[in-house]
Structures are given as C-alpha cells and as structure tokens.
Image (cartoon, rainbow, N blue to C red):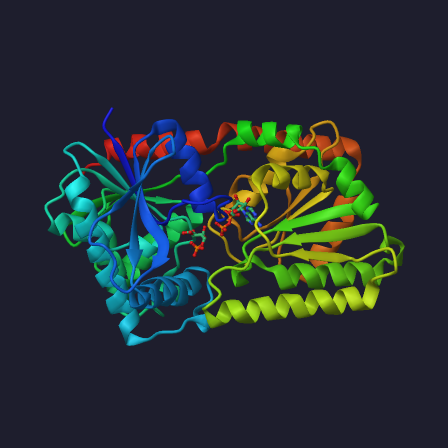
Amino acid sequence: MSRLVAVSNRIPLGDNPSGGLVVALQDALRTSGGLWVGFSGETVEDPAEALAFHEGAAFQRASFDLTPQDHDEYYLGYSNSVLWPVCHGRADLMRILPEYLDGYRRVNERIARLLAPHLREGDRIWIHDYQLFPLAGELRKLGVRGPIGHFLHIPFPGPADCATLPNPPELFEWLSHYDLLGFQAQRDLDNFAASARSLTDAEQVSDHDFRIADRHIRAGVFPIGIDADSFVAEAEGAREEDRMRSLTGSQMMIGVDRLDYSKGIPQRFRAFQYLLENDPSLTEQVMLLQIAPPTRESVEAYQQIREETEHLAGRINGQFATVNWTPIRFIHRPIPRNELAGLYRQSRVGLVTPLADGMNLVAKEYVAAQNAADPGVLILSRFAGAAEAMTEALIINPHDPWELAQAMQQAIAMPLDERRDRHAALLRGVVEQDVGWWSATYLRALAQAPG
Ligand code: ADP
Ligand code: G6P
C-alpha cells in the first residue's frame, strides 16, 4: 500500500486539540500510518526553510513555522477573514485587504516547496480544508504527478456567496489541480456544481465529474465520522456522574463548540431564556453547560462574538439565577476528551445549533457517549452537515428561538421509549459511518479517480 501524506494547516503537536479536522485526521492517521504535515503554531521572524520532524505518534509528523506577516495575511487574513465567513454564509463579516490574497498564495507556494523534497513516487497526497486550496497547483508546478485529493471540512458556498469573493474564478482554478474533491454533504457538492457552472466555463460531465480548465476533476460526498468505538469506551469509563450531580442537582443541557459566530451560541442562549420565561417550573430544574474555547481571537468578528455571548450569559444569569442555581455555566477551557465524554453522557440534552457547519462532530460524539439504557436527546440544526443523515435528532431552525425553546422542552420531557428509539437509530449511523469508514471510502475513491 502506498504511503499516505496528509497536509492541513492545523496539526496537533500538544494535548487536547479542539476542532473537527484535527480530531478526525488524528483518528484516521492512527490507523493508516503515514506522514502528516502542518503549521507548528509558532510564528517567528526568520522561519527555517525546512520541515521539522516530531517523534512520539503512531504516524510521522512534520511542521513548519510562519512569519508574523504570513500568519496575519494567510491564516487570520484570507483563510479566516475571507474564506471562512463566505463559506459560512456571512459575507457581511468578511474583511478584505489586498495583501491577504497575496499572502495566501505565497504561503501555499512555500508549503509546496517545503513538502516536495519529502515526497516519494506513489505517495497518495490528501490535502485538507480551505487554508490550502492552492496547494495542489503549487505541487504540480514542482513536478508532482501522483494522485492529490482535497477534502473540505466546511460548507462550500453557493453562487451568490462565491460571487462575494475577491476574484471568484481563481477558487476554481485552484481546485482544478486535484484529482478528487471531497465534501461533507450533498448540499456542498450541489453548491460546488452550481457555483462552478455560474462563475466559470466549467462543464459538468456527470453527477460526479467536471471539466475545469481542460482538467478532469471528480467530486463526491464523504461525510466525516468519529472514532465511535473509542468514544463509547471513554464515555463508559468516565466517572463524572457523581461530581456533576453534586454540582448541579438539575438536568443538564450541553453545548460544546469553538467560540465561533457560525455555531449559533447566542441563538441557543436566547432560546433558553425564552424557555425559562415561559416555563417557570423549570427554575432550578435545568441548566445549560456551554463549553466554548475561544478561537482566532485576533480577528475582530471573534472578539465580538465573545463579548456578545458573555454579555448574554451574564444577563440571563442575572435575570433567573437563584442562590442555589446558575442557569448558564460558560467554560472557555479545552477539556480532555474522556472528561468531555463523561459530560455528554451526563447531559439530558445535546445542543448542536450552528447557523452553518460542514458536519459538526459534536453531534456524533454526543450520541456515541450516551448510556443506551437511558440516553439523552440530540437537538440538531438543519444547517449542520450532520442533519443530512441524523434525521432522528430533533431537527430545528436555530434562527427561530421559539422553535428551539420548544425543542428543548420536548427533549427534557421526552419519554424513555422514544429517547431509546431515537438514540438507537442515531448510534447505528454514527458507528457505521465512523472515521475509519470515512477515510477508507475517500481514499478508495481517490485511487479510482481519473487523474
Ligand atoms: P469545528 O470543526 O468547527 O470546531 P466540530 O464540531 O466538527 O466543529 O468539531 C469540534 C471538535 O473539537 C470536537 O471533536 C469537539 O469535541 C472538540 N472540542 C470542542 N470544544 C472543545 C473543548 N472545550 N475541549 C476539548 N475539545 C473540544
Ligand atoms: C474547523 C476547520 C479546521 C480548523 C478548526 C479549528 O474545524 O475546518 O480547518 O483547524 O476549525 O480552527 P483553527 O483556526 O484553530 O485551526
């Protein structure tokens, strides 16, 4: 079997990585082995022009540093102030500076230069996410001929959103150098097809095959999964029960998200507020535990979402708290996975309410962590990629606080039989389409892509 070389911007070199990409890729590489290349997280004025190799994982890891300018323009700039908001339907939050696109191209070109000397004949190269769209084209310029696939962990924008990008056709030029494009959901593949047709002279040859700039590209849907078996084991082993019971004495609803404006955290808090306003019997009976480590804090839109959520949580707690009870607990720390699994298991309701999300692994982790004999209920936004398959969750529109509050009420009161039926069906999907299934299915398709 040829070697797998995965490239992503983020690579876990420390403990407790959060973010769906590192969690999933780490699980995938543990089984297949290979090399994983990514940004070290260090910014230095004069970075080494070579990859640094790290010991201590079941697979090889190699990283590169960035200059502060590269970090500003490529990571904070084009990746997270242009592509991220556009892909999540928030072009209003986009901040475009001319140097961002130059920095994005420059860093991708540099990563290709650092990576090329380590590639071997026959390697399968798997590039991840929106930070690295141009990487295949840069590798091709350096003579790399083998199969190169891309997987997009976030939503692909439709034509109206794509049109807000600076130089939209360039996005499709970047993508045209891949043999296989992988998306999280059918919705993303449909958006890709519609945007390519509307913004370029791309031709769609079949459901999965496109001609862009005279190159043949295959595209498919590969919904990402979790390492379900190990998550179930973590949750069963967790001994959080007693601690949480003594902490709260009430039913718990849980949200676990990076503190990102795409995650719908203020909408969730407002719905909880309506719930408490409309059903005073829930006072001291239910609490919301929101775990949300801050992310991308130098970007203004992230500073704003942090202020907004903290303000809202403070206001709601001020309005409803009693001497014995705080309705919203807001934790900004990363939490070890086994502890997280225990907290999911303790929670009667899992709240996954993004306004836009590629997949959302928290939805799958919550289901895997439940006690099958007395499981909790998943409330899931219809705008998460996960909603395409997890139809037995309570599917809601997160923009409508009344609908969400009603779903919270329904989940809290749901009879045991219904909870078990819904959970059993959801768990089956999470276990069948786990992370091993995802990477194997993708890599099989890459091997068969026309190239
Ligand atoms: P995204 O990729 O947008 O961050 P996902 O829901 O797909 O969203 O993935 C988030 C991942 O990060 C999950 O595996 C989740 O368990 C993990 N995570 C989120 N918050 C924390 C936290 N505070 N501590 C530890 N892990 C976290
Ligand atoms: C999402 C993206 C990843 C990203 C992660 C964390 O999962 O799809 O590419 O790594 O968020 O974001 P960060 O900017 O901290 O890497």
